[in-house]
Image: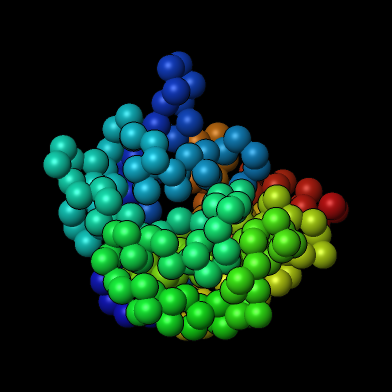
Length: 247
């Protein structure tokens, strides 16, 4: 892991009317680090990612990218999203466009790459996620796992410095989960900075540099996978993990 904080939330808060969803969230993500966020449904995990990417406007606090506050008026959010990509639960692919066109559209439109350059990169990324043979297919011809791998390739096509994953396997049939997690494992090995909200405990244990357990809008506990899974300090963490083990 290289030195240097790439992303940071400082006293981050988010409320929807009277519902306080995030309460004073402080997280630093180092360049090259894989951070997995776990916790029960409704704990604020996805809202936290959406606040980082400015899809939700925080009620208070800061989101820093290389020290620059993305919540400030005048911050270049579009440029920020090019550098910090996001992969969603739902794949959000354009149904009438081919797999390759889905991957190449943003680099052509926003980074002004030539079509030839974008397609060369697109094919390289489809090879990376094991879908080179599906370049001319439409999304409807793919399984959910294949569509999610296309979504990852599309995010990588912007050549980001970090990727945010919002429960990327939760919409998939169980037999398709592994193929997406394997692509994410490869990205981690390649040194991609990743913040992953996940219910896949084995993935978090095996791949994360740091695990954060959230509940009720708070960070209850964080540490290495060995600390959080092997010897959790907080009773709330122990209770959550025991339910998963029983499941």
